[in-house]
Image: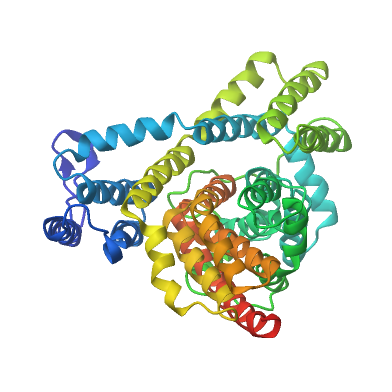
Length: 494
């Protein structure tokens, strides 16, 4: 039965809303209104501080719309905080977030990274690299293992990892019938989980400074970070799960099973995804090995420049973009106008993920005002012992990071609280730091609106919710194994 045409757009079918959506909206409004009316001024929000994040999860799972779910959760939190002027407060927090140095850095890095990747694609160098890998990779299993291996090699930053690995490998994995959701899972699993395990990464530099600032050690913060690497269990577990998935020893679970069945029928890209099918019949331009050099040289410059500028990815991507422009213009791989258009197009493709991350920062600010992180820590404080501390730190901080999507910002609040607790209980500081970093890595990995998850989905060619739902069973399995490991280590080392 055909649908009737839309009255104001005859070329479009008329699509009416469903009662389920209306019930969801009414339920959310009723919950938020009752919490607002019953809350006493100047008192803590307690368990109610968790409500905006729960609303985000419910709306996202129900609608599969990430940006909208975050916006609804943020507005609900603001109604709880400022029922008389939540619109004004939303405008104020939004302006504060957009003027934040971290957000500005993120916009520039991700936008320029999008443009950088677009130059590699428009020049045909990504195609040459993929064709070179096709000669070496002969099976589906090898394509998954090589994707994981490339992710491990690009360890300097999770943003670079998420965008560069997916751009290099999606043509190859398409050829072997791998779903874009599984590609995104492997890319994301070798982003934050790998970055915490390598002391020459943006994560290591940031957290080492944070540990030193908060007197977690009398010596170097980086030395404490290095001592903690063996105890960053989630990173090790996540990598182990990736290897098992790539080898086919761990079966497809939950939504991933349906995604893989669809890909094996010839549709690796899910419906509604922001990507198009890549033809495997295109021939690379010129000599293939020259194309491979033109792909690897800019990547090497990007990694080298970032390391030279003390792990600053913004300076690294600026240098790499200028280098790539000069390299391609000298070889006449593309005109100046074509390359500049590619940079602009690449910047535009990053708008949705950047909007999701920006609204995620707004939600984090609202959660901070509601006291969510402090509530989680206070709720667990009565149960803390030397043996249980690592496991409880991992579980509580994993929940907070997952709910807020802020793998770095949360620890500015939590480290000044957790470190004195560990010192008071005389717990192993490397073990506790390993639990904190594991929680940060899990939250970044599992949260469907965290920056690295959104970029992994964007680079791999699927929607954040498509990636989040298919990845979550594996992330949850990794979290359970990690929690058990910290519980055992707490008793053994305690």
